[in-house]
Image 1 (cartoon, rainbow, N blue to C red):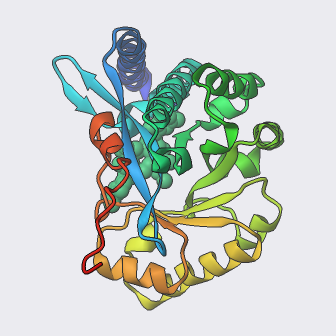
Image 2: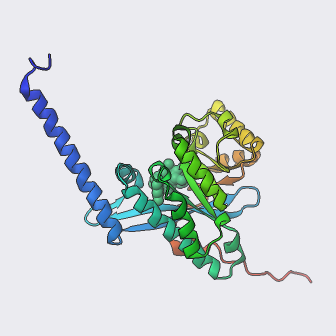
Image 3: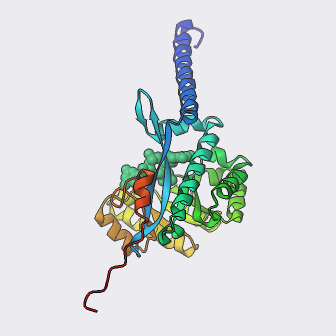
Length: 285
Ligand code: C2E
Ligand code: MG
Ligand code: MG
Ligand code: MG
């Protein structure tokens, strides 16, 4: 059949494939150049303690300002970087920026700055590399940040698929680093697996937080309860509405992150949230 349909079709296919590969290669080069030439930056989205109504930490998120193009969202270039070792360079760079930023905040003497954690996303590809443990250890040492202030976020697929990744996570936890499972609910992990996964924090994917049908609301409550049963801290992602936050509070969800509370912020604005509140003189005394 392929033979009789002739060379024409195969050539069209070849051309498309070639064009795609070329585009991919060009984007890859642009990302590498961008990293080398200071086009990347990190923004920090606050994570709030739901019950205490105060900041618990930040998630470091990568931004790429591509000359002549503008802001390229991570979802459009991280997958390309993940096809090669480039993602390891990117993750390491973000990790370095983030822990140094936290160190700078801690150095201001703010009491809140000592308590907050910094979360970074580590790609599955990077996690399967043996050096991920020394990368993290070295970044912490260079910045002088205690390991228990760092959270490493990984998506669930890598944990289930790859025993090497799980082993490296155990190594990270042995350093004292906190491990979070990101976008929980979007992969194939069952709630029962939470019992054995080497993680400390569960981040519920925003698709569950946003859903308004009764089933999804029950599901979030169930995830929180199961996670607590297994000793995990729970973060709700993508909280955009007051009603969602109220519900999460009722479910005893520990932390919340989302546009309702704060968008990702430039370092300076993010750090301003850590200024200790001035002591207010008590009235009437
Ligand atoms: P993620 O780790 O799940 O990060 C949360 C994403 O949700 C961020 O998107 C954040 O801006 C967005 N978000 C936060 N609150 C809300 C909300 O209320 N509503 C909506 N609609 N979105 C909200 P962002 O920054 O575009 O990052 C997308 C993904 O790219 C991240 O998802 C993460 O998987 C990946 N990523 C970002 N930075 C890095 C990095 O340094 N290394 C690696 N490996 N991946 C990264
Ligand atoms: Mg994340
Ligand atoms: Mg997420
Ligand atoms: Mg994600």
